[in-house]
Length: 115
Length: 113
Image 1 (tube, rainbow over the protein chains, first blue to last red):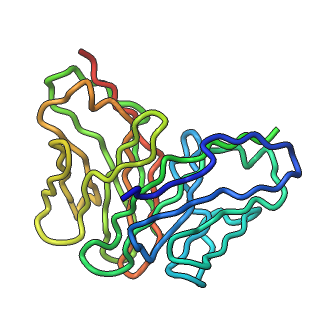
Image 2: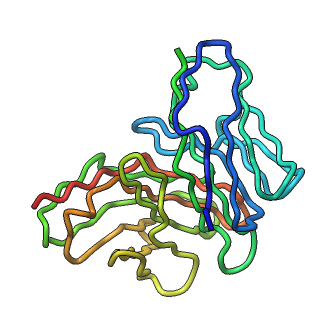
């Protein structure tokens, strides 16, 4: 299994540009989520999904959109990038029920810089 | 609301000595507690979790954590530190019935040779 994969690894945007961060998992996990990591602030939840067609907002959703058309993929869209969105973005997935639920598996991250 | 605090930004320990990384939490109901480790330029890796049962939880790489309900703490411990344990450690909490994890701000562990 490849686990959780994210592309791209690095990205530089100009203010106002839009882009999509890709996330895919091959573990048949129902639950997927996006976090951003900023120095001294840990990880903050942006959006999450409990299954295909179902998404919900996390702690810091403004400026981001998500969709979940398949179990495997959970892309994160930046609609109009701002310097405040400079961060490292992590995608994570887990089972949503059973003894293996709650343990989240993380992708390698995307380092985004907005100029 | 659920929250977690890691009071130390950095912990320094000599190789071979025991280490402790502190974590306290706040939840309305019963907590699910987790420790993750992040090596440079990598994603987070799961170390261990407490759901219910024995208060001492054993995890990967020789780490363990003790759940203390009265002190609302879940400190990470290892009897003998290795230089390769140097990394960023995150504590996380989830209330029963909630979906999302809340992470602490992280503690950088530096193990000196």
